[in-house]
Picture 1 (cartoon, rainbow, N blue to C red):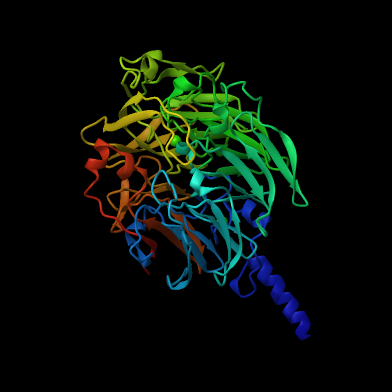
Picture 2: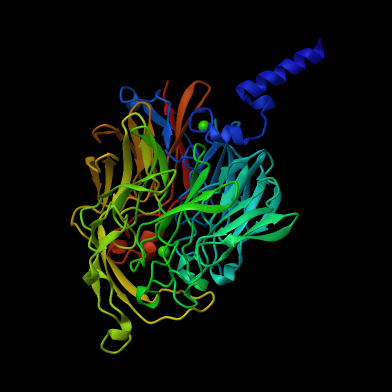
Amino acid sequence: MKRKLLASLVGMALITGSSAFAAGVTDAMIEKDAQSVGDVLSWGMGQQGQRYTPLDKINAGNISKLVPAWSFSFGGEKQRGQESQPLIHNGKMFVTGSYSRIYALDTKTGKKLWKYEHRLPEGIMPCCDVINRGAALFDNLVIFATLDAQLVALDQNTGNVVWKEKIDDYAAGYSASAAPLIAKGLLLTGVSGGEFGVIGRVEARDPKTGKMVWTRPVVEGHMGYKYEGGKAIENGISGTTNKTWPGDLWKSGGATTWLGGTYDPTTGLAYFGTGNPAPWNSHLRPGDNLFSTATVAVDVSTGKIVWHYQKTPNDGWDYDGVNEFITFDMDGKRMGASADRNGFFYVIDAKNGKLNGAFPFVSKITWATGIDLKTGRPNYDPANRPGDPTKGPDGKKGNVVFSAPSFLGGKNQQPMAYSPKTGLFYVPANEWGMEIWNEPVTYKKGAAYLGAGFTIKPLHEDYIGAMRAIDPKTGKIVWENKNAAPLWGGVMTTASDLVFYGTPEGFLKAVDAKNGKELWKFQTGSGVVAPPISWEEGGEQYIAVVSGWGGAVPLWGGEVAKKVSMLEQGGSVWVFKLVK
Ligand code: CA
Ligand code: CA
């Protein structure tokens, strides 16, 4: 009798996912993450990265009653940029902080359950602040990447390290800050370091042990490998050596997968964006320089590239094509959209990579006059490519051009959201340009490998950021909300037609998904450069966002950095619910 009761209790716990007997996170749970409102198991609130919650308890009618439930400080003297998206499972929030820290917090009270601070060596080389974007959950583990290019898996309950694996050599410029992606039971990660001539790639590991399953370089010419019994087996060269790269340049070709990826179970493909080809000086590397500045679709089962779509062939502006590729249904087809640093919003067939549409989503694009829908290639304006330094007056500096967008991009790391209800994408865009010029450069391990100089400038007096609702069928901007500082935080949308996003000025805002009208805002005490999430617990809907100003803008923003120098640093997570 007793045994039967226990068995039925366990059965119930498995069905409801209640905390008393909660099972570990499974691949099936992760595939349903976008629909399951009681948890947030993945970066993107689902593998497709739509950042849409089916919850509608918080809506335009009651949002004035949305108040803080608790807040937690990351503490210490370490602040800087906080770009992390929290995860929610089993009554716990897992949230990463700057300097490769991670915290487990009680979702109801904000009580700290444990903290892990990764010991970082001297000499790490993160290009764009000491940020981290979040973790992955699998079984009883929480897994995140560190600034010294390692992966650390911790026990969700204790914070004890279960496994640790080195991705690559931080002294060569490798680092890692993206949230890992779980797909088909594998842990998929990328690398950062495109400004140091490292080699971009996608890697799959066993999430329970950290052992490598396959690795796929995304610089044309490099060999991929799969691993059996700890042995590396050749798994085909990516592309064809020297087809799109001259000489030895592919050996330090960049194309880093620094923002991580998304996955679509209906295609079996993982979509990773790739950064700039290295160095920035494009005159040194005539050719398309595959697979840089592209969306690369990798078959998760085989580790092979199924298709790629390159957005800025022979990039000369650091238009990293890393922006998240969000799959969605359009006219009965599975499409994917990404809002690129280069200023165009692309809609691409998720199965075969065929271009469906390409629309400007910023007011000024100088480098191309448009995208040819037949060939999928940009129509370049040759006069707007920064000049060849060897042709300059002293051989040391090429022609200076004013390019828009700036390399910080029409959109950068801040993830957009898609609402299947409104059919619109919500894109945190920025309006800026740059003076850019090329200089001679040679590769040296662990040294910046740019061959370019730049100054970023605002395009408008009164704003840089613009939250834009974009119709993926027409490219029409349905509404926009301007923001004085550049938008650097992600977006979330809800079944109740709300759009949540944060601003560097410190506000978390909720606006009407149909017209952008501001309905609510809350001052978090520092700039928000992270994406919000939502979940349900005890019948109540919660909203959370991390606050802490920093990231690439204050470091690289030139004249824009001066405009935002009054913003204060921080480091905390805020949780909101409706007051009763
Ligand atoms: Ca979920
Ligand atoms: Ca870059």
